[in-house]
Length: 444
Image 1 (cartoon, rainbow, N blue to C red):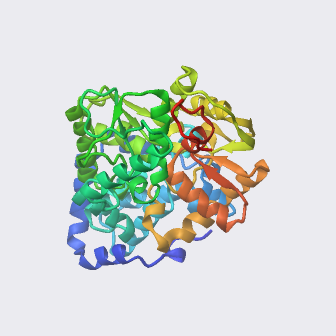
Image 2: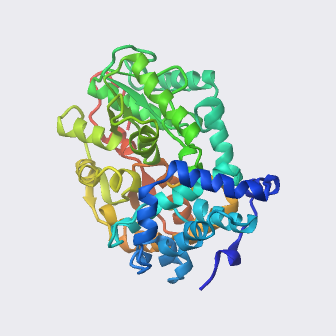
Image 3: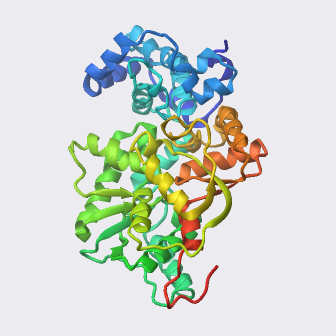
């Protein structure tokens, strides 16, 4: 069995935080977090975990490292939170470095292990508390901290300036009107049926997804809008860095933007972690029993468009595809059946991975691990060999994944393990194969 000490990686952000930290501050911060932000839930988990190890085979890190118990969920909790509790918060800087690396880079918070625990212990919650402690102590990986800083300064994760956001939308509208002459990307339209929100990588380097969404909404004749102000980005890496304060600011701005526009609901693009932030974590932190504006994920939205006949397919994607189930909308929202309905609507043939649905292996990106940057890229790619084997076993070359972070994580795995697979969003295929409006000027 290895230990975290055997595989420590230098990270500028973690090291800088440790250098600034005074030993006397560690215990007071930890005690403060445990006393004011945790309660019966953590205490129950700590007192009921039997250390039985049944969670081990649920973790892709454990499975990808030949059953090394230090990578098992219970092993990671034992090396972090149980050490913190045992020492009553009086831990060393060296231990903190180890806690940070495990919490940020060796657990995706994917919650697969919770399904295998006979007591239903939510390891992701425990590890999230470890991340919260590390954040409060300033011991966070540099790359994800930079992203959290971007959220704090701009309310989006990629430092997109206000005018760049509007320019990107106008540019995509101009491009799309060559294909669909009457298409508009409405900005600041009050009282529309829904506000469409995306994550910051879309205006930055995946602008085709905004184009495709506008084309689909135009073909369906929908009443929609996008905001021209901050609050348009629904992603939230502060949720994963442990910065609950910035996380809450981001989500409050998102909901308040929708309220200002007086829309009936928010429709989110194909992202998993953003949905978790908007509908599961930040709203609870803000003290809302239910979100102030209804939120619909794009999987549900596309399902409704196809089932109601508002979008009809002129053809189906040829050949065989397989489906990746994003953790945050499958284990977190239960969209596995609607995802399959949509894929069968738009693709000729589907081969399921094994295991699938709520038992599917994580992409190894959606818990903020991919945002910890290059120092830890090898950790997540090698740590998901089991996913590569799962993909290869399908024998197909086309993968459907309705989540941005899943695309990032899976693309790295596919490249490293030379799997010869291509990944598509649902919107990619719907746009390409849907019936065009009568005024459309062609397209594929």
